[in-house]
Image (cartoon, rainbow, N blue to C red; front, side, top):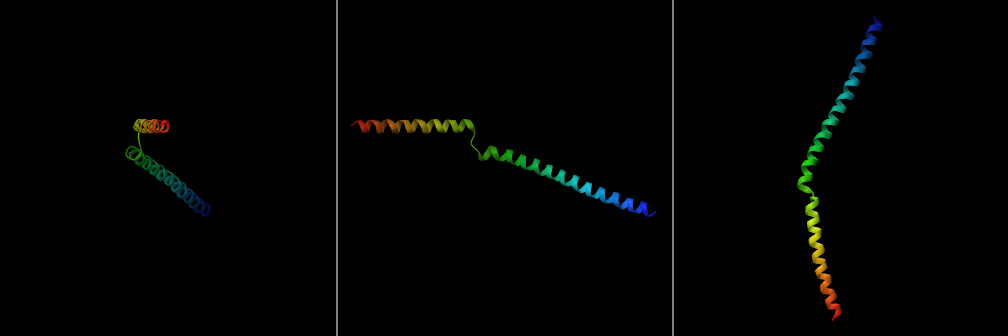
Length: 77
């Protein structure tokens, strides 16, 4: 009878530890999914889209080209 009691305690301990590990993994996966969804929402509002960035850089390059042309004209005089 003592062997059965010890076996039951050992199995209970193993199941408790296994349940805790599985629950920790499950909670971690849920946290990662929630963080990923939050990141996907934040990306749309916090970061510049690629085509907007290209347009802005093109405008900056045009302005710099005009400035350099004016400087070259002044240097010639």
